[in-house]
Length: 320
Ligand SMILES: Nc1ncnc2c1ncn2[C@@H]1O[C@H](COP(=O)(O)OP(=O)(O)OP(=O)(O)O)[C@@H](O)[C@H]1O
Ligand SMILES: [Mg+2]
Image (cartoon, rainbow, N blue to C red):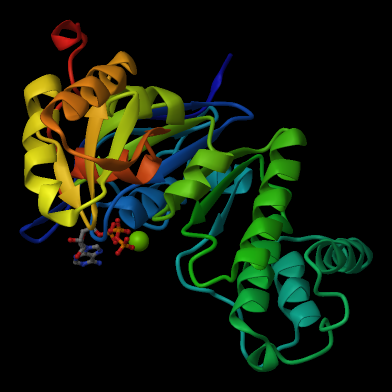
């Protein structure tokens, strides 16, 4: 399968700040890549370079067959961008915003009108189409912003935190729309701070931190990497928390942690929970809850970007 996006050795600095410190990634045509990273990780810088708004310092960046520096016009013609901050004109109406974009792209008046009408209704903005954008809610602006990037029917779409600030319903609608685009063959690279968003939409996820890719894979692969599951143990009496943590550590190794009224431990082997239950019983520590749940992408993100518990998952060999 040909790659719609191919990046090798990409670096970019602003003065003494290194925004991208050597990024390699590829996205096959028709797939969704989720780029996750904390504030300042380099996500917007990456998207702006891909969208030909910013020049790289070093490395090669191709969109389809086009190099974003050498063939920037052709690359731009293939792509659409919804930036991190809505870039719509407040004074113009929703329809007029799309009209301007369509005409600037060289579409005929009839084609522009048709396309604008189609996008406005698809994004739930048909009723508000004639109103100035300054009367739109944040979610409506975000949707209009997305509509402007779809006027050109891009084969490759860059979405920089597309659902930041949206309520859960609007977020769900936008996800639905992205799925439809992907079914239609569009390749999407989206950045997000919402792990759930990456989990729901992306075929593949890269986690970027301080300008470097620190992990990549499918959501499930990343979860497995940090530890298949999380063991949750809640003692009946809070005073038992430290004892319980130490017991869990003696079985799991690693570093189970106290979180509120429970102890959490990343484990690779579910059999650990039965062993722990036995030990707790022998030790006479009454337990209110002992459960296994899947590691959330949140925990993966925190573990990998270093803000959370970095301890390795409980190894299998200690069981039994
Ligand atoms: N035009 C610029 N001039 C100077 N520094 C910049 C510029 N653009 C980005 N940076 C710096 O580059 C680094 C990466 O910024 P970038 O905007 O790419 O991060 P981000 O991952 O998009 O963050 P956020 O989640 O906050 O949007 C940051 O340290 C930022 O301060
Ligand atoms: Mg950003």
